[in-house]
Length: 354
Image (cartoon, rainbow, N blue to C red; front, side, top):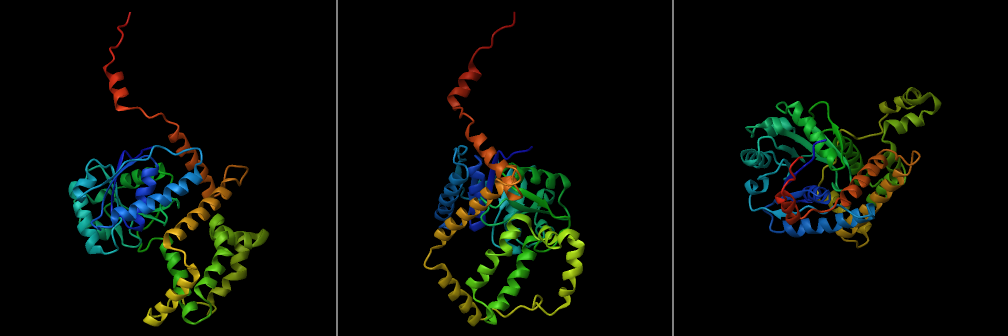
């Protein structure tokens, strides 16, 4: 399986910093470019949380962490990189500018992944002279823990690039899913958007509060989704007759006026204030970094629990978790060879035969 020798990250926000953390903790050197003067501080704070989570996840020791370099330009960042992940804000004009610069300076055979959560890769490729090596590599936050990455090729993406991207993402412990057809927002965000739209109405109409709505998700179907997804859960809900019985029983409900799915409430100042104030109350004074650490602990615990199912083989994300933690432990056990030792071995005279 192909691995990443050196990576470049363009953009160091929430998602970009998460990519940096996953790559570094897999022992891969990363060069990052982000013009934000606070980028180094922000990435450093994400790294602290990611190291903490990984030490809990792999108590036997981690691989030697890759080297992080803050580049002064995109050109400097992509030099020598065989894998480049772009994670700049969701503006097509900005994507065009950044991808054109990456394309100009990166090695021709380097894979370029975009973290976009909804822009079509074909629309981004128009700025590139080598569009065949661009794929969407859409992750989920926190990137260093959640393994899924949606791979989407554009009209000019080569099948070889999609396959190589799949291998590269797999090599850092991720679960790549190649989306069969190019579509805005891909699959995951379309599902999330549907739940988000309905949630906004439930808050606006004072049916529930943000905390109560989150409780309804995390104490019920959220747990089911975490280990079995949607369709397999509904197959089980259909009883011994399975999915066909479930659809026959609950299919008619889809015609009932239960949802405002295609109608979105105006996010006016009143609704924004309501959501923001309720969210502040829900946090009980915890900072974002504290909430991130709680989130990380919960995710590790859920994956650890799933890893013990199926007679120790793991179930769903737990099975991948088993493979990933074993791989990290194996990398951690590899002895580090110093440059001096390597040079000494190379200069040692070879014995003549006979």
